[in-house]
Length: 122
Image 1 (tube, rainbow, N blue to C red):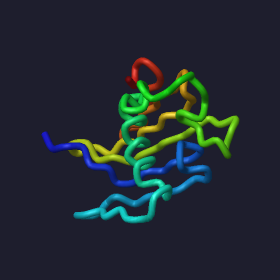
Image 2 (image 1 turned 90 degrees about the horizontal axis):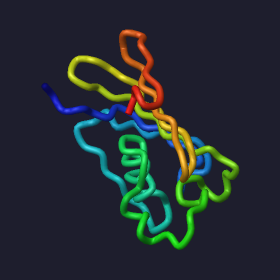
Image 3 (image 1 turned 30 degrees about the horizontal axis):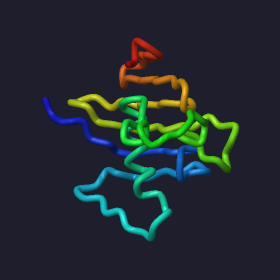
């Protein structure tokens, strides 16, 4: 079975991304560059949150739980949304996670039309 491939990513109200941004990833190589504070780390955090539902590297650094951990402070009240189109094996799927620091909803839309939500999608 082939490895999953990210084709595109959409991020809105998540950490360094206030406004909706679409990032095309269907290339043989993707290079990220930019000065500090332009969203490079937020992009990788978005992929982790989309797939895992948490940002483990930030958990021990937080003094108190608050929405700014996930949702962009300028986009409050949120929620944060991260979506991706992926190729998994021979199928194309759309993955979407929305939520805040305390909860999120994962949704998977399969190529065949089936949609999984919540615990089924996890």
